[in-house]
Image 1 (cartoon, one colour):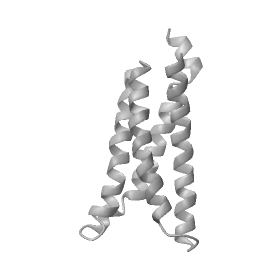
Image 2: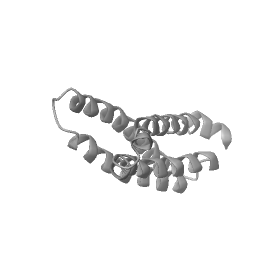
Image 3: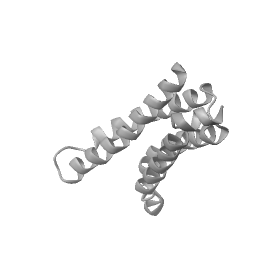
Image 4: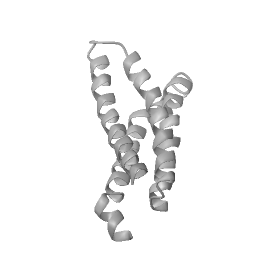
Length: 124
C-alpha cells in the first residue's frame, strides 16, 4: 500500500510540475525571466518520470498504466531533444515541443484516473 501511495504522490507532483512549467514558460514569454527556470524544471521532470515509471511498475498497477508511464518517460526525455537538437535544423519538428507537453499531461491524467483507489479496490 505504501508503494501505491508513493506512486500517487509522485504522479500528482508530476502533474503539478507540468502546471508550473506552463507558468514559468509564461514568465519567460512575457519577459519576466529567461527560459532557464523552464529548462531546469524540465530536466527535473525527467527524473520525476523515471521515478514515476519505477513506482508504477513496482506497485504492480495495471499493465496499461505501466505502459503509459513508460511512454510518459520516453516523451519527457524527448522534450529537450525537440528544442535543443531540432530548433536550428528542423524548426517545424521543434515546434512539436508544446504539443508533446500536452500529450504528456493527457497521459499522466489518464494514469491518475485509471489508478484511483476505488478502481484498485474493485480490481482485487
